[in-house]
Image 1 (tube, rainbow, N blue to C red):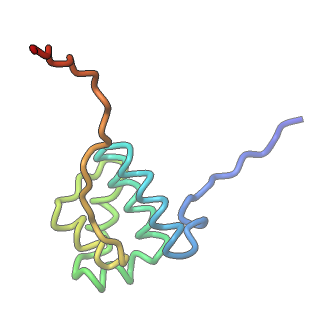
Image 2: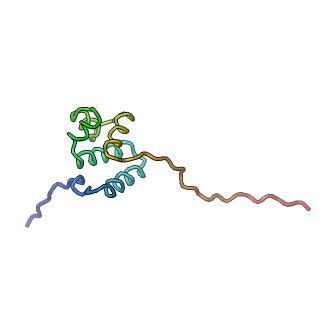
Length: 108
């Protein structure tokens, strides 16, 4: 007996701003630019590539190409798509790691 496998499209699970934000936060945590671009493409598909194209002024073809497996979107394109998706870009410092520091010798 063989099991039938089905393709899974993560875009179908992105129902709402919280799910989208969590999905993208996880992508950004990887620090992998290609993975982040691919994830942003998944979110754009979930929202509708035609709608994103209209809101950004970019063509659907350009969006699909930019956010494909081999795509490499510019920062301008990435920011425009994030704006159209209602996502903000924020910066935070890296997590602080406690480092043991030598104690200073105290002289009386």
